[in-house]
Length: 250
Image 1: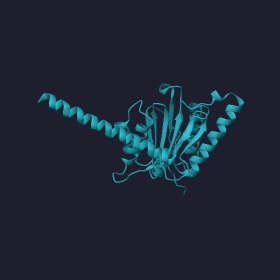
Image 2: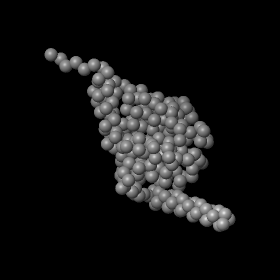
Image 3: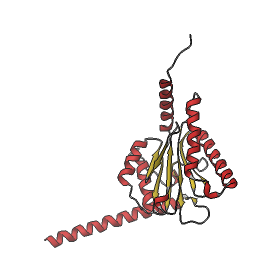
Image 4: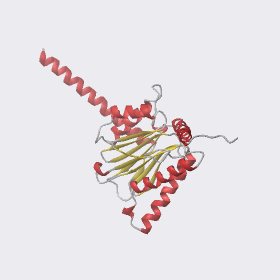
């Protein structure tokens, strides 16, 4: 006698399976800063990247199973190259790429027994912050247009809450990086992420030609030290102001 499972139960089981797989991975954070879009991954590997360039102004970040999101990344690169060659480089957009990924993920989710255990962000940097585009895609092909920041993978809710508390529009690269690292550390109060534990890249709107740039461990460390120094200076200034106010009152 064949075993029957309702379509609703099948979809629920697939969704639960994919969510569990994604939550077992390490988190990735994407957020806007004053000069572009910052990508930060909890990823000590120097060979297996979670963050990659897709095209001139477009980058890709992913969590989940590496072989699955790597297949999607390569497909995105081929799509961008072919369309840029056949039409015009300006016709290759993050929105178009997000639609392609959404169709692929949706088809895989509904028509195969095992869904992809992945979650993606496709981002395109614009001439200013208002024209930046950040799209988040889930395992079932759903697409969300995000603004400001995105957290994926691991304990994403805890990371997103930390970003909500700490994120400020128009932050410098150093401050945005420190905010992202603190959000990633919010998953475990005992964990400290140093420069060698991070994969960091930016889409810098002020660069010429290729706007995507990876940051070295040394550069990451310098930016974190810069942000900490600025925070310490700000705390000292606040303390001096408070002391001055108290003296005036006396």
